[in-house]
Image 1 (spheres, rainbow, N blue to C red):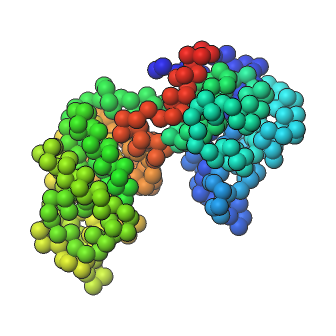
Image 2 (spheres, rainbow, N blue to C red; image 1 turned 135 degrees about the horizontal axis):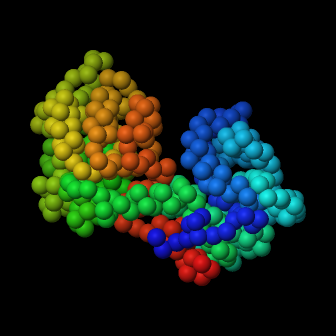
Image 3 (cartoon, one colour; image 1 turned 90 degrees about the vertical axis):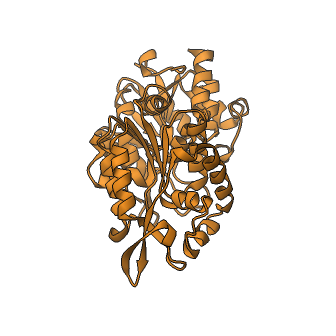
Length: 404
């Protein structure tokens, strides 16, 4: 890797700023954190800094949202998880923050206030401009080392993510290192054949991934399910019914049908689409072949014939990259496709999951240990898989060249 890691630096006795992504589902009325998964992912990095003076930097939500709030609950949650005191400081770069940082002793941990309370942190900026912000200048003067572990925010070109590495010696935390390493393996070193399962409703991202991995010979095949599958069916002149077409239109994805047509014209034999689907009729699950989809019924899952053939295909692969469900998995009647494909994908040699809903279902099924890697960053993971260098990763590489 072209960036530094914790193995490359001495942290004992140093004041270390650790950027994490503790942005979590919250109950705004009680400020209770409803899911601590993101906390747990970062714990190894924080524990690895037990001899340092640790300053945790993170954010919660963004301006205008109901859960845009202070980090008091986050500090309490982290304290319980690492079983060490974590002092919450309701300040970022003011006097109380500076005094709290300067009085830290080895092994102590503090958490500064929600970074996005500072207006500059909400701006998208080039690293050199981000370096000049008041926020970055003040923070970089307080610390000796910056550790970026916030893979979930790595696609954001914000001051804490891309400016701090330009202003001080910076390395990747253990989570950031693992994410980049495992996702990079998909592009080189993963066992073939490789299939990308692209589903869910984030169609534009999935189409971009499909185009990239097919045109660059990274994937042997694409398996299109969920709304992504419906887009490819529509692109191949299949009548998917009014409700499914209206959903595509309401999501603003009608233009993606043309892109899917272009992919099919170039790589049609490498794109696997559903051959049967499940709809709801009179409150019941009913299945149809794709050339007989009712005009007035929404597609809610794969049909049994599709599920069986896709399961067999998945089990014959060396590598699976799984991103997005096959249907409305929240409804037990229409969760069959998602669950069966997840079970099949858990049996291959190398398996990567792009976070989000798919990872949540895998955890619910208790299959995490059967997968090689469950990404913690949905948006960052997808952007990585489209072949783009993430802004935070680029900044860490540049920092290592400057200060390493």
